[in-house]
Image (cartoon, rainbow, N blue to C red; front, side, top):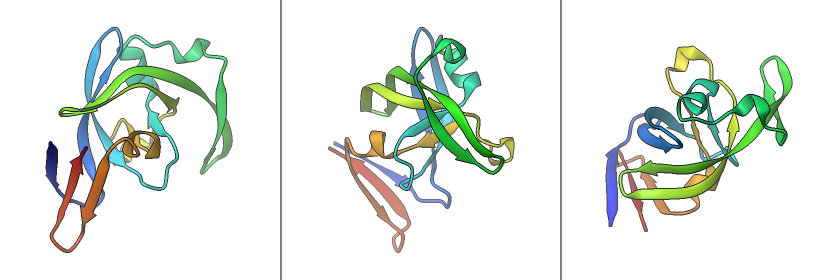
Length: 126
């Protein structure tokens, strides 16, 4: 089973986030990010409470280093490709980009992902 996605730069795809509620959000694929990152708004909509989470990690931003909550999300999926109980960092991405988060390596490493820049597509498979 695989999905073929027309490659645009940057690579942004719709992703489903599940908690008590489900949200479909636009996320940027970031092969340089160790972990997946989701906005406060998205996590709160799905029923998570980032403001009461004690586990945090430092995140370097343009304004310096900030401590961000780490939340275990019930499920994140792209079509039939799903990762359950994925730890994500809760941090807002600047609104100019119009995305709700970053897909990091802790999601990507669960699949075979090929980005073919010459042919203009990204393929995800098992």
